[in-house]
Image 1 (cartoon, rainbow, N blue to C red):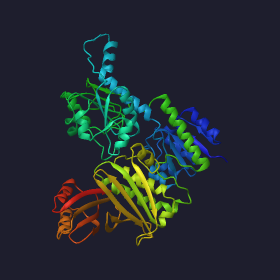
Image 2 (cartoon, helix red, strand yellow):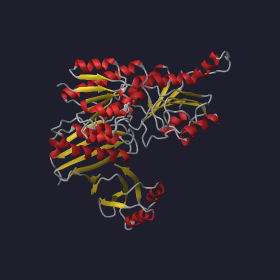
Image 3 (cartoon, rainbow, N blue to C red):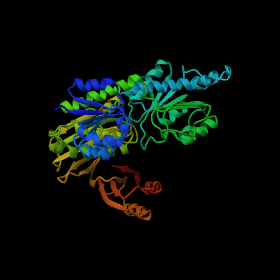
Amino acid sequence: MPPRVLISDSLSPAAVQIFRMRGLDVDFEPTLGKDRDRLAAVIGDYDGLAIRSATKVTAEIIARAGRLKVIGRAGIGVDNVDIPAATARGVIVMNTPFGNSVTTAEHAIALMFALAREIPAADASTQAGKWEKNRFMGVEITGKTLGVIGCGNVGANVAERALGLKMRVIAFDPFLTEERAQALGVEKVELDDLLARADFITIHTPLTAQTKNILSAEALAKTRKGVRVINCARGGLLDEAALRKALDDGHVAGAALDVFATEPAMENPLFGHANVVCTPHLGASTTEAQEKVALQIAEQMSDYLTRGAITNAVNFPSISAEEAPRLKPFAALAEKLGLFAGQIARSGVENLSIVFEGAIAHQKTRAISAAALSGLLKPILEDVNPVSAPVIARERGVAVEEITRDAQSDYESLLTVSAKTAQGEIRVSGTVFHDGKPRIARIGDIGIDAEFAPSMIYTENEDRPGFIGRFAGLLGEAKVNIATFALGRDMPGGCAVALVAIDGELPEDVLAAIRDLPGVKQALTLRF
């Protein structure tokens, strides 16, 4: 009996043809996704579920999907799928992360033109019979400086088109190397430099804790007077209230938004301003883009259901069922080591080296390296996963090196992740004990034994008497409970490190007080 696929959202008919050509049974029910009860009643009969955004694949739906092996999202966002529930049931979740790049880039360019020439307002005025020719005085695009915040796939497409329009393009992206910037023809700059120089600013980053309100009131104050702002990426990347004030004050000349902090956006601080252009999240809304993502997801799902190949999975690396039990604990370790390095890095990572030592060196290492790379990129790119991470790293010019060698320590297997930045190298090693739990074994050249925890404090300080007491005293005064406390040093009176697991979050004022302790070189919170 061939695998059976349900398409529960509106998808291109070409996807149906691909499924059938690959020998799968397919049922096309484009309105079923909106009826949760009906979907729950039938989902148990299918091996694959192809969706867009209307279908909400909840834990309840997944619990009733006894045969389900793969969920395919035609598009980027998978926030309508309960990924932990799917993972717990062994259901692969796939998406098409690069299918909408050109369409979104073109929409950003279109909004930039609309801002520059006041096209929406001029259209409304003319169709109202006013003929206000002297009212609408635009600006030229040619020769202007475009600041691109986030130069990944979409940002690079925007930059390429802007260069074709004879604009000067500067870009801020922590993971953009000088070599990649040169290949794109853009100038790599820091964020403050971009804010000060750009005539137009366009945002193309995912929404993460680090990028939320990247255009804050403080950032907008650093921009040049008369700047125009475009956002086709994610709502929440700019402070909408602060942007409205900057528009009202005349500091920002105009803004064009396709995405909003709250969607559907029935009301918004920016609505009604004469110099604001808004569209209802149309970045991916072209016939070509929808056709492309439908064809891609049909091919990916067919490959998995007929051959076991995994492409663009968001919840599992590309390893076989036989290898998974052996490699899964080390993949988890690698991701956490990469996440450690990514959170400590103060500037863009240029090179990532993963050293496999001992027994693990004789296993399939690529999936483990992808997991480490995923962790490294995750502080900046929230949606990155072990499958997409290598592609994203290549786009940003991050070199990845694997080194395998026989055991040179007391550990049966030791994994070391080294991230090189302009400021130096971050090196952290870890292992997996027989209990399957990943642990940190070394930070730089300092030995330490620490389990990972959801919330941790990392400090680097001079080894001097009284530091631990003052450190712990600050946490106690703030009623922050310590779960575990791991210490290490290179020599008496030398460099010391501490990894402290705590219950809950650390208040910013307490972190600031820790940084002010005598001898502290670095202190920050880590999340795993």
